[in-house]
Amino acid sequence: MCLTIPAKIIKLDGRYAVIQDATSAKRINVAMVPEVKVGDWILYAASTAVQKVSKKDAREIIDLLESQHPLADPTKLSDKFKKIIEASKKRALKKSEIIYLLRVEGAEKEALFSEADVVRRTYLKDFICIHGIIEFSNWCKNDCEYCGLRRQNTQVPRFRMGVDEIVKTAVDAVKKKGYKLLVLQSGEDLFYTDEMLVEIIQKIKAQCRVFIFMSVGERGYDCYQKMKAAGAAGALFRFETANPKLFKKLHPNGKNLSNRLKHLKFMRELGYYIATGSIIGLPGQTREDLAADILLMKKWANMISMGPFVPGAATPLAKQPHGDPEMNFKMIAILRLLIPMARIPVVTALETLAGENGRKRGLLSGANSLMFNLTPPKYRVNYKTYDNKFFQKEGMWEKYGLFKAEESFRMIKDRMGAELQRSGK
Ligand code: 5AD
Image (cartoon, rainbow, N blue to C red; front, side, top):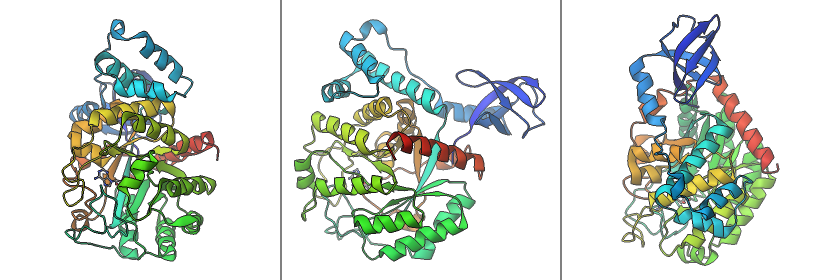
């Protein structure tokens, strides 16, 4: 679903009103809420008022979204920084320039975030979506060193949701809560045959209109071809790190980066909307590696899927330090400069480290969506890619979603179409 935006009515003119939101005055259609008066607060989306709200509720969401960038003092910005920001307007940056931006602090860091915020508002307006993720199995045949679902972890109780249970969870999320984009994720679990994955997608699509993103790992061309034909819109598939040596070290059992890239290549050929990215702050990862991650995301991603490393208790990396949320915010901002139309969600791992404020800071540094966990609670507790996952205040955000509104589906469709066109499909 997409978020609505609160605004105060300052003038009425038949079916139209002039409103004032957090940033500017606009003219919108109020035909759907004919009872409104001057001074009332409404929620709007795409130039249409959808609902009247109390001033208190309006304030609540303004607080969630309002820009709080301290104005960066221009005298504190180096010539080099200004040159890089100017260059970023061509939507391309050299690796050395990206590394410079990954290092910025103080006024330059604030200026980087404000620039990304301006690009987001210019290209995507105040358009923020909430997507849902359903984690349907925590079985995994791999042994990724960072991941709590690794096969060698015998301490986590394993679960699998049945086909109909997955379908019902997804359809309820769409029909009862208004979600329009759902990620179905599992470990690499071959219990689910290609045919079962196809059946899940078809059964959901037969009951509701929703964009389905599959996140099931390295399943090969045939599986992805069948899932696309069944109606999947996107694939969420991280390359994890652009450094092939680091990749090898973290992924025993012969896994390699080139097979990940092969998957991304055929996903693009098949017309998938690709969500990909890396883990930030992996042990042994350098700033150069993170710059290479950004360039690889620029090459493959329509939607960014990256987050900080959070050590998992029963993994070989349990005692390693977690990734730096500030580095994550900088990466969000740089990617917003490079791919203005990309969908950039604030992911759970970032919220786990930075809390509710992580959501807000993420949105203010260029992110434009949130990913909420819709896994049934009895399973959710055991989907521990890492510990202490953050789940909070989701009801408050959902309250402002465009419940069941078809408009919200169309808005996502248009933007996904425009972004797929840019990336050459
Ligand atoms: N910290 C952060 N992200 C992790 N993932 C797995 N383990 C961790 C961790 N410890 C991410 C991987 C995977 C996704 C499902 O979860 O990037 O692709």
